[in-house]
Image (tube, rainbow, N blue to C red; front, top):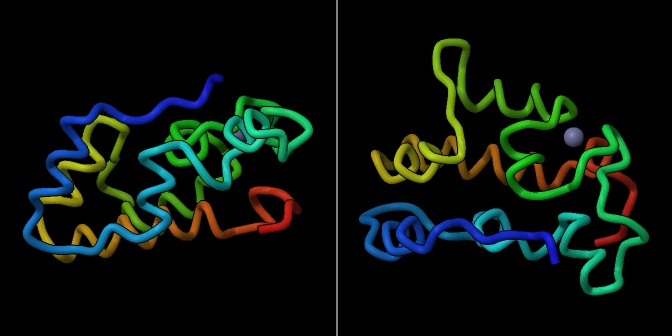
Length: 122
Ligand SMILES: [Zn+2]
């Protein structure tokens, strides 16, 4: 199976945080389970691992940080002056309640947006 979870040290940071709620979107982003084709394919619920839009493997890392289909959704959360990557996302979310809400919303938008991510059923 090609989906991967993020390092568990990040998970420990989440467990010890002082603010924010780990909702189902954040859980899916970290675990790789859920709406991503790499996962759905692995459990027999998607015909292929690729994201239909770009042909790349549909992993959390790809959707959240790399895929051009989600550029607009990322930039809304990040603003023009900052860049977040897979190494800094959790650290930023843990830095303040405001940052947490901003990136939690970004993750939800990316995973929820069926016109962007595809036409699969939930
Ligand atoms: Zn893509």
